[in-house]
Each structure stands twice: as C-alpha cells, then as structure tokens.
Picture 1 (tube, rainbow, N blue to C red):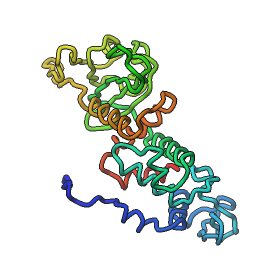
Picture 2 (picture 1 turned 90 degrees about the vertical axis):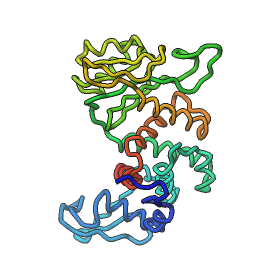
Picture 3 (picture 1 turned 90 degrees about the horizontal axis):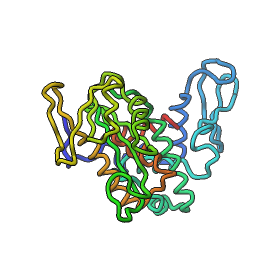
Picture 4 (picture 1 turned 45 degrees about the vertical axis):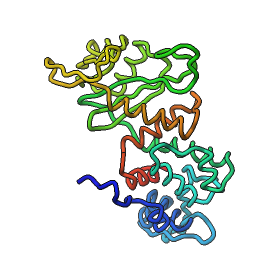
Length: 297
C-alpha cells in the first residue's frame, strides 16, 4: 500500500538520534554488523562472546582475550572524526533527493571543508560498492546525456567541455549508469553487452550508434525525438518503446547538480553518478539504504 505524502518518514532525524545517541552506540552497531557480539573468535576459532574494552574502539573475546577492532579496514579506520558524525552524514545522504554538497556538510557537521569533502567522497564510493551489480533484463531503456561544461555556440551531442554519461533502466527494476568517452558504436556496444542480458528488449532514441543492438542479439526499438516522437507502440514486437524513465533520471541529476553542487568535474563525475543511481535503485526505502551502506563499510 502506497504511503500518504503527509505520513511521517520511517527514519526521521529524531529516530536517527534515538537509534544512535552517541559514538558507543555507533561502534556497537559496526561490531554487530561485521562480527556480531557473539560468534567464532578470529584468533582461536572458539565460539565466544565479545565485550567492549574501555577507552578503546575494540572488543575482547571471552575465550582467549583476543582484540577485535570493528572499524579496521573500513572508511572509519584512522579517522579522528567521531563515528556519530560519520553515521549522521550517511543519514543525510540517504534522506536527501538532490544530494549534499561539501559546503552543506561543513555547515551541518561543524568540520573543515577538507574533512567534509573527504567524508562525502568516501560515502559516495560506499554507495557504488553497496549497490552491487546484476545484469539488466526484460525491457531495458538506454539513453545518454551530456553534463557540465560550457556550450560555446554548439548545441546537442558533442557540445564542448561536457562529460558524457549513459544510463540503462530495467522497467520495473534496477538502473545502471556509466561515464563514457564518446557515443561511438564501439563504446555503446560494450556498455550494453556488459550490462544487459542477451535477448532483452532495448528501447533507445534514434542515435545511429544504437543500430548495432539487433545484430548483438537484442530486440531493438527506437523513438525519434527529432520528429517529436516520445513514445511508440510496436505492434510487431508487442511493446511500447520510450526512454522516459532514463530521461527523468537525467532531469533530476542535472537539476541537482545545478542547485546543489553547481559544477562537477569529469574526474569525479562517476562518484556523483553512482550516488544518484544508488538512491534511484532504492527510492523511498531510507532504512534499507542506510543499512546497506553500514553493511558495506
């Protein structure tokens, strides 16, 4: 049953601080996720329980006294930033729709801009890792877009200084995105073959490079945007072709950049793209997104 827009969120700021009131609660959660408070001792293999060592971010096994550091080999390792701030930043990332800028993190967390920027980039990397990968199948929409840069007198595909991004959306399912160097047939072919199962229906616009899809074992259909065609039903294939879902994602992504981040360099574009893809794949499931990120630390 769809929730009313007036209903309070499942994971509000109040709920966050109730669940994670201090650094100790955050550390207990990391320990529970990674090792559990009871289980096999990593040193002697004995089934045992673990208890917190006072004054240290570590737990001791009751069987042999070995020390377990739950933050080791995670994004929290060697960080002087309190765990609660890390957790709260993850909360901000999963509850926002338009992303969080480094300056906004600086203001909300009370840290330096350098620290805020680093925390944000680490969490974006975590989002790409947590989302995992699985091949798209069924009916898939594919489209490319140009982001950033300037347009000195040239419009459309090939506009100077822009980063080219490609998106593929399984109808009723996941979305995958990638930064690509160009829109040549060889480039698009590799992305589709890497991400979409053979035999799937693939809808695209009229870009000539997509004509390769039928030869590669896909059922391909197009819409001609140049002729103001946004949706077309193919009676022979029995499917409706459009790329509206991917274009809606591009619209949100571009508006978010303009309003929140102002500009994203080509060097870091993939991080921000994966951040928005992660949220698109788990829309309105804030608790799930938060737990997926914590599980992936």
